Image (cartoon, rainbow, N blue to C red; front, side, top):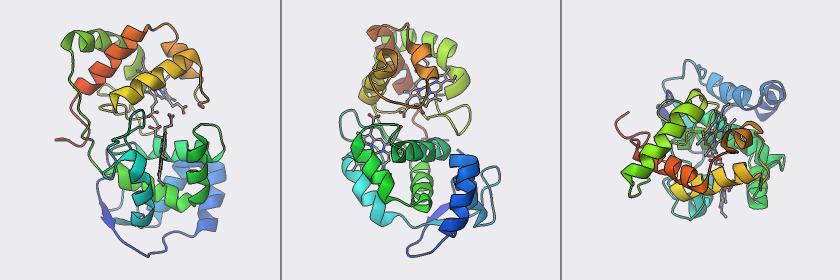
Length: 225
Ligand code: HEC
Ligand code: HEC
């Protein structure tokens, strides 16, 4: 994760919303994040030394479900800590467009300006993940085989994303990983990606459980990176 330099700041107006909205139409999540960072003399490839994120009021609300430090304490709800900012902003836009459930998250996305969506993504990207579970080595070994063959070229050799557009799934809450992979497989909920359904279509429940154990066995992002 290249973005390690945020500083907390309250009450600053960052980049004009109108200017960002124009870029958003052209480039989606990447345009929004780059516009925010450009306002502080940088870009995703070359992040500024420091950039303020005015988000404390907002993340208090997120904390009730996603954990106050971005590590979820609620069953089946993902951690946001250490999530890749491009994936994060993309999902906020997807929730906003009602292309992903729950409806509650649509409401959250609607209430947040594009600037807030980006600021939240950058805020969480900087926090470490601290999820733990009792890893069963046999299940993890089964999962590793699938991971190397089916997942690594998009989600990266360590699970944190081959590029920042992909979800960081390393040390994500295991119950959320399992329920999400089953939903992709069974096509039982609305997500944007059609790729994932095809990739996990042939996996059994035990294969999916193995993947969760394998991903939990990798060192958490932010721990010693
Ligand atoms: C009432 C509970 C609740 C609150 C409060 C909440 N969320 Fe969520 N959020 C969820 C649930 C549930 C999901 C998972 C949806 C699913 O199962 O796919 C989610 C998913 C997400 C995701 C997608 C993560 C991923 O790994 O794909 C993002 C990003 C997100 N929320 C951001 C936020 C932000 C930012 C806030 C605060 C402004 C917030 N949420 C507040 C319940 C909540
Ligand atoms: C071709 C690229 C590609 C491959 C290969 C791939 N994924 Fe994904 N994955 C995606 C994309 C794109 C998304 C975002 C889905 C969306 O926007 O709805 C995603 C989303 C996910 C999510 C949801 C993340 C979250 O926080 O909600 C999980 C979990 C996941 N993938 C696990 C896996 C596993 C496990 C494998 C291997 C069995 C795999 N993926 C293989 C592209 C891929």
